[in-house]
Image 1: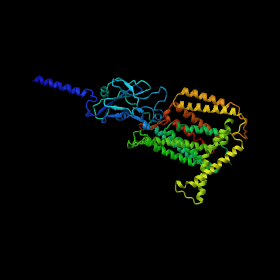
Image 2 (image 1 turned 30 degrees about the vertical axis):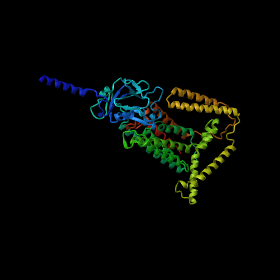
Image 3 (image 1 turned 180 degrees about the vertical axis):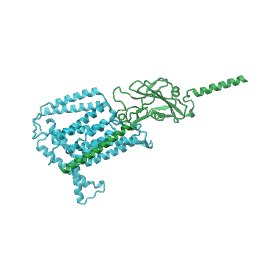
Image 4 (image 1 turned 90 degrees about the vertical axis):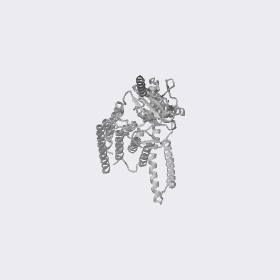
Length: 218
Length: 337
């Protein structure tokens, strides 16, 4: 009887360990809603993995990006949908995006959209992320590239594990490299510049006054 | 005593140097400084009855509309004002302070360019500009000068008609009362156009001593050159630098081929040449220094001119050299207006 208890405790421990560390079962439980993965590759090769839960049966690729919480900048083109200008702080400005959707040359990179096929291959998205459908267990890929995806070969379960899914109810995101900070001026530089602009305003005002005085005198 | 006009070339250098920052980027520091300088010079050289006040007011309205349009259509940024329902087409989504600020800077840039154009219209000696152009462009220059004065002339005519109608008891209450203003304005415009056309005809404007075949060939080459030039501009937008350079070279050769044909035999004479005086030297010198400084910064540190508050609001980079260069463009106020 004592041996049976030992075996039961051991099996319970194994089950608990497995339940804690095992990757989530994609699409196994319809009550838990849908889940989809994201793999984002920046220009320097840094990777971001995200695992997003959503209650609907399907959402668009752009909606998946928005719900993942990764920094995103899009340009709306009305009925044509949204263009991805920046992901994770990388990409082109909104002005450039509206002009050319970041494609500034023949071999210039842009945020290229891929979808993982059933056999794990990255297939270029032909419909665009605003129209494409993401269902439970799907994985979308985004790469700042002009041709090849350079996205890693991975399974949906591995994406969930890398992203750290299960730690909270919200989207799980993991980055191989921290995000770069945007170029911005410092407060000291700004203060000096504001002082210089103020001085220019004073000189301009004095110049207008002098010019008018001179003209009225003439 | 009427002051002699300043050489137009000095003004053109000034205008290019001042228009460059608002045209190449939306960094608030250079854009606002350019607006201050353009406004000050426009005020310093303001003449009476110039007729451009309506244009400046219209540009102000367009800038304000641009701010609203930007807020309603650009749903990017981290400083959210409010969120409109997604089912609203085009304007549905978050409205942000980021979009409002960028729209405001864009409006100031637009106003700056308009003020530069207004100032040029006031200060340029158009006769001198026409004389500076090659003989072959004399006709084009005459037409351009006439077109450039159309807006202020129409503005002045509208003011005169309105004052005359008010003196007769006219009280406009809405769009339906615009008839007493629009009809005389149209009739007056047509009458002025007829008189101008007769005056040009009486001076043999547009006549030519060359054969029709030569003129057709010249016109065809110029048309081809303009077409290739437009394609080159498109190549520049696509960053296809080599293709753009080749196309520009072809356009230049075509232009040269068109213009190397002998002139139509009607030469122009000059009673006196415009003098390049000290004022022109001051304006051109300061503007040239400013332009070179701006170009150097544009090549070495493009971020000094660029700024976008999307997706997050960041403090714009302040380049003191650029601000100093723009300050030099106050030089026209230092010389006798």
